[in-house]
Structures are given as structure tokens and as C-alpha cells.
Image (cartoon, rainbow, N blue to C red; front, side, top):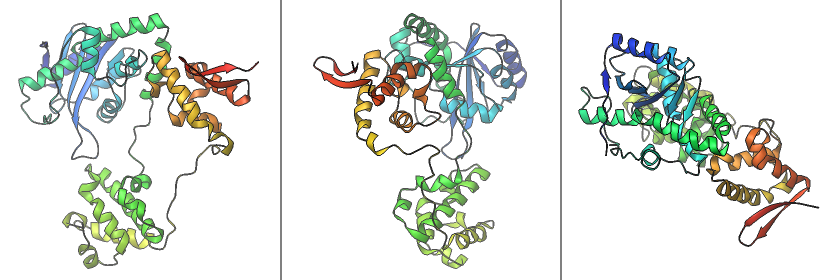
Length: 384
């Protein structure tokens, strides 16, 4: 296990000096620590940064993070690990995300790793053992302990060295452009608030409702989602799942009826919430419930459905042969999109088209066929 020297910043002046320094860096390591158990949006507590000058841990509760936007929007590459949630945090705290990222977890997937942890990569690629994370640590507590600061610093201290090791191997295999494309796909993902109209799908018991009860459940779940976002609290703090189902099944018309339902507590009826909720129920009563959102592309042709499992098995084998994480090459949804002729199918362009999209196209056109060969597994061969 290795200790990590670092600087701790908890004032705006020192943070602005750090921002000035990082603004000219060709690359920098970046990570965040946050909580969202009690809030709708992630609440950032700590930001970790590292460059050639050293490692810095920033107290995000004491510092205005908005100046960091200048670094994120600058020319430097942000080296990160499993950054999907970090990008959401940065977008909310700074109003932007890095213009260029290199995600070491994604990059490792192009070298045969399967969703590796940072600790695994550091040990196998850099020879560094890091302390195990305490999943119960409270990053919002102050003051931060020495152990917390050391753990936070370790998350970025070796990322640039890991970046060097991964880039060298990827360059040898000619896969750097693939990684760049995959990382940019992550960078531009939609990270906006969840669609309230789809909130009902996350409540397991609602799926068993029908007719008017389902319509009320959908409306109440959307109401709950909107109030949670407005108050930055968790949806279940606004109204429990049990309460959503109880309201949908009973369709109350008065506050007294509402209060009598299982799962409904004081939070659901205070500060005018009861009146608002009853209006939602009244408006939804008798409405036709929404169903699955229509697909923007044609349905999968019936004659191709039997081929889907076989093609998926070949893609998985192709990924293993190429030492690629299967999900990076093609998910089942990606294959379906290609078979359906979706205009934005990922397998229709770029490196994915070269590796699997094109061969699948030849298979569908009858120019190639899948066969099983002992010792090789599924083999796609041109038909002559």
C-alpha cells in the first residue's frame, strides 16, 4: 500500500491559483466525491486534481467550484476513471464538462479488462496498491479526516501514470482512435434530469395496475418526480412507492381520504402538497394510461428475430477474440438497432462497423454465413 502526498485547498484564492496552473496543462487527473442518498441531484463534497506538479484535494463545500469551468473547457485532457457520475457532478457544479476526456475504465476495456476498478488497474498496470474504499464514509462531514484525504488523493495520484501505460498499449494495437470515440460518446451523453413522464416505470408495484389506476399512478409518479427535482430531495422522501400505489388504487377525492391511505404520511400533505396532489389525481382519473414510448425506428422484422441470439453470440465471441469488453463493442440493443435499420445505429459507422457491423450486413444479405467450427466456435465465412 502506498501513501500519497497532496495539497489541501479550502479557500477560493488558492483554488483560483490552482485553476490558473491547470489551465495550461496538456492533461490533468480528475475525480470527485459526492453524495446523493438524500438529494435529487448529486451533492459534491470533494474534488481531486493532479498534474505534473502534484496532487490536490479541494474542499468543495468551502470553495466556489465555478472557476474550474475554465480548465474543463480548455485544451487539456481530463484523465478520469468510470466518470459517468463525475461528469454529472461537474456539469451541475461548474455548468460544463471537460472538452476531452480519457476514461481509464473505458480504455482498459479495449485491452481485455471487464469493467475494472481503479484499484485493479493501478495494481496490474502500475504496480501500486491502494487502500480499499470505505463505502460508508461521510464526505460531507467536516473536518475531513487524514484517512479521507489520503484516500481521495490516491484516486488521482497515479492516474496520469496509468494513462501513459494504457496509451502505450493501445497505440501498439492501433486502438487509440476507438478509445477516443468511446470516451467522447460518454462525454456527450444526456445528463439532464430524468423525464417525469417515465418515473412510474421505476416503481415495481405500478406495473401490475391497469386502466384508470395505472393512469393515476403515472400522473402521481410524475408529480412526485417534479417535486423532488424542485426541492432537491429524493422522490421517496416526497412520497413513498407504497403511497403512489395506494393513491392510484383508491383515487382519493379529499384530504381526509388521502391521509387515510397506506404509505401516506405528513410529508405528502404539508405546504399545499395535498391540494396539488388531489388535483393531479382528479385530472388523471379516467384517462387512458400511457404505454411504451413509440420507437423512432422500424420494429425488428419478424424474420430476423430468430437470428438475433445467434448474432449476439457471435459478437460476444468476436469481442473475446479481439480482447475487447463486449459492451464496448456492441450491446444487444446495438445489434437490434442495426437489424431494425435505425438511422443512428452505432454498428453502422466507425470502428464498430468495421469489426462487426459490416460482417453482420454481409450475413443478412446472404454474402456470408455463420458456421460452427470445432476449436474456433462460431465463424462468419463469405459465401462463394
